Length: 286
Image (cartoon, rainbow, N blue to C red; front, side, top):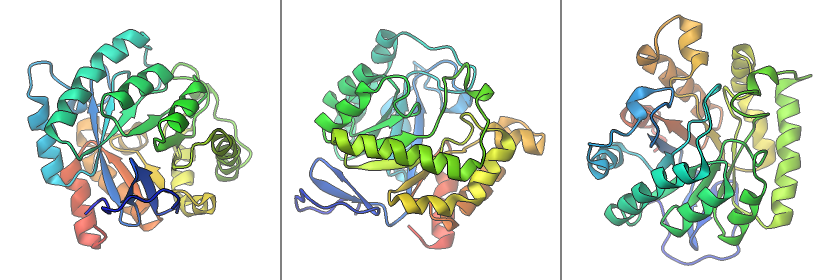
């Protein structure tokens, strides 16, 4: 079971997050499935078709082994154009309401860097804030997480979708990111955000070589004593390295996901839930 039944108010560990006074166990690796309410996310199969049955699509993911559903209404891929705040809200809120009604106990994460979108999502049924900008775009999002006692996914990134790929200068990729995340964690804790998940931001303000170096050094981030999320599902670090298409990148994704689990990752953010669950089944970690 994902949740313990008893209410627990003052327990924190790098193996658990507290969601609405219930502990969610991350000592067992978990699968976060992606649902993009956008017309331009980099992987077409993750985009929602307006004509499809969203609840049925989510049910397939849940039945396949998904633990957390990550819903996004604004593409954050490098080079993506930002949509207006209102358009993002109009995209995600009806879907969150529909999914919450169909799946009362499913953990839902809102993938946004805007505080107002995050706040409305939490009010309408989301549980977790997944901020790909790590507070760089809108630091009020930290206050929203604190006020609502919502777990917050802190992603390492620099700049925005248009500028990030020009901001890849590091003295030491792992140590620099460790320092930058540590500084933000200190600020988050001062504001009152207690449940934090770390995302190293593969593909965000990092070259392909830096992405792979970061993956090799993944275990060093256990020093932060927070759960670690890895998201490199079908990303360019895979398909460009192998000179293949995004559609052909599932094998490479599975290899990197397996490596990440063995290096201590707590959550895999994926487009392909079945394949991720097979990793857990074979490694007997789920």
